[in-house]
Length: 70
Image (cartoon, rainbow, N blue to C red):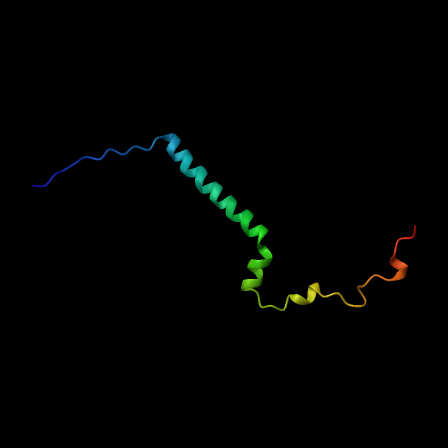
């Protein structure tokens, strides 16, 4: 005995709009997350020789001449 049952599925315009909004929102959220964590993501996939940009040398250090006078 085989039972054939008809399944009625209907997607109206509201359902399609909701699916589209879900996709656009997901891409936007992923973009914001990447922007917030870009340095960590870059550190994972980077080569690691980007640390020299954060090192302060003696030439970059402020001197007494650079200090604001009151």
